[in-house]
Amino acid sequence: MHFSHPPHWVTATDLVPYEDAVSTMKARVKAIQEGNESELLWALEHPSLYTLGTGAKREDILDDSLPSFETGRGGEVTYHGPGQRVVYTMLDLNKRTKDLRAYVWSLEEWLLLALKELGIGACRRDGRVGLWVPEKKALTTATGEPLDHKIAAIGVRVSKWVTFHGLALNVHPDLSHFKGIVPCGIRGHGVTSLHKLGVNVKLDEVDQVLKKTFSKVF
Image (cartoon, rainbow, N blue to C red):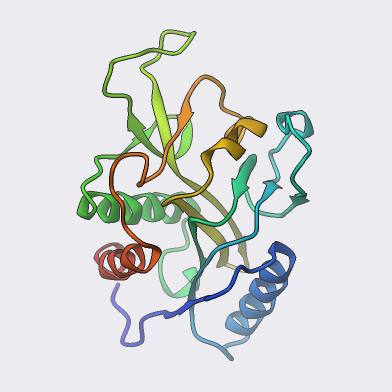
């Protein structure tokens, strides 16, 4: 379905405290539900912290040196911080497709297309939300699975079929902070970023690719 008025895209220039982002999203979602505001794509960075989704286990935080925040999105524990492009997607599925699985698939597809434009071949993995880059050296985990490295996380929430929260793409964050958690409750696999993979792009360059590929999926 195509819209005559695409979602508004806003990019924050300063780090946005997580609590402020959540309250802003809730207000915007309510306004969209009431027909008073347009859909919104909000690109930002957070100060370093860990967030716990509705499926998170507190024991998956291994290092409590960073602040943590329990939030209402789906998923488990993840890290947010500078150098990571977070995009919060406030879309009205009442006007699109009222199917949460299809929506998550579309977020993944959007990221896959963007990463492909940036020269990265990422993939989905059954049972693991988010996007993964296979290890080129053919290493395996302790359970014998091929070793993957997570490059993007997805965690969403829906209220009256209006979405919020969204995705986090690792551009050039401090990857050492991921060692303080069990990312998304998944053990044995790694975490990577565009810069670690040799794609030394800036956040605004990533934004341009995300804007370009969004309309190919949504």
